[in-house]
Image 1 (spheres, rainbow over the protein chains, first blue to last red):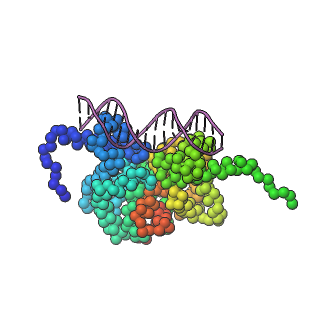
Image 2 (cartoon, rainbow over the protein chains, first blue to last red):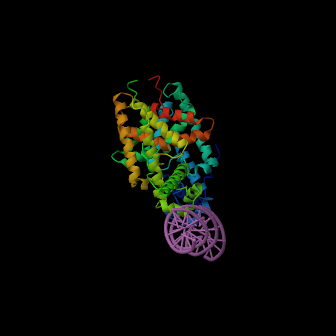
Image 3 (tube, chains in turn red, yellow, brown, blue):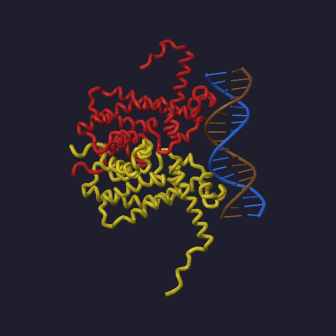
Amino acid sequence: MNTPAPPRRSFKAQMHEARAQAIVAAAGRLLGEKGFEAMTLEEVAAEVGVAKASLYKHFAGKEELCATAMAQAVGRLGAFLDGLPADLPAFECLRELLRWLLSQQLTDELPLMLARNSGLRGPLKDCAAYQAALQEVSARATEWIAAAQREGRLSEALPCEVILYSLYARSADPLLSMLRERGGYTDEQIVDWAVQACFDGLKSRSTP
Amino acid sequence: MNTPAPPRRSFKAQMHEARAQAIVAAAGRLLGEKGFEAMTLEEVAAEVGVAKASLYKHFAGKEELCATAMAQAVGRLGAFLDGLPADLPAFECLRELLRWLLSQQLTDELPLMLARNSGLRGPLKDCAAYQAALQEVSARATEWIAAAQREGRLSEALPCEVILYSLYARSADPLLSMLRERGGYTDEQIVDWAVQACFDGLKSRSTP
DNA sequence: GTCTATACAGAGATAGAC
DNA sequence: GTCTATCTCTGTATAGAC
């Protein structure tokens, strides 16, 4: 794509970048845990160990910081997809994609898509980095969906886009939290059920 | 025969109740639209047409007001279930339940279950009215799920509770908002797709 | 019970010294 | 660039007149 960064960056620049990374990471964690409105920059600063005002030397404000965190999450998904075996069937790729989304919600607590009424959804539509990264993974996922539909693995009754959004939406699905709060289930069990509910549906498949 | 039934309450008490109802309705609408953190009591008061301070004559605070709105939403679901034909098969009852949940999200914008990380989820666990109402509808839904599973209409691979939670979770599913924002689809089309994705799953059913 | 006015707290953002 | 200190605004909640 573009030329890689110059190999030799000054020590100070490296530290600067590392700190920015730490800020984004903390923001992403808190964003996923508490939501955009409930999280505070004070918490972010405290978690990183810097003063609140220092955040503004790296980011213009709360919205930009959180949008960066979201864009980075999409980037991680792209990297994960890159790591999938090249010969993995399209349907299996989509299953892995879903598992990754669900696992992220349970571990990092940072969902790829935001809740229905998050205040960050508006600013996110104007974040070029996020939109571009999302477009990139969406293109790949769309290819897989079309292929899986041709192979008869995915329903052709649903438009390609509806399937794509259905997968994305699982990222902010409250189902996982509900099952976890209920207690008695392992995280892995919860993810398995969520994957099954999404792909197989609630209706019986054994006896048509 | 005799005089009509006397009013059960005094006129003033009726007005008081009516105003409280209007407050709850406005709170519920704003809660669904903007979420617990983003909505403000000022908006609620403005929408009802009363002073902000007057709200505290009816409710102890924001949490109690919103919890009341949520409990009332569950009550509406219960009333809807009461209105279903007595001879409707269990599976069809569950389908209607899901359609009702999704329609509520699109119209009233008030979801039955909250987003994964809403600040109201904690207080809601301590709200007896909400828990009791939810318990009541859950009991009925659980009966239907068990019956539908016996009839082979619902998957027996998923525990009854996972199916129940999967239905409830659709109430806060971001899928509908995503499809609506994309544009080009009618609300009815969106609900149909969401129902189909939930019950039939994304996998093909025609060709095993 | 409803209003106006206000106290109080929290959070985003900025100023200015170093 | 980072800090301390501060500004400003918003929102919950309360006080007191009527």
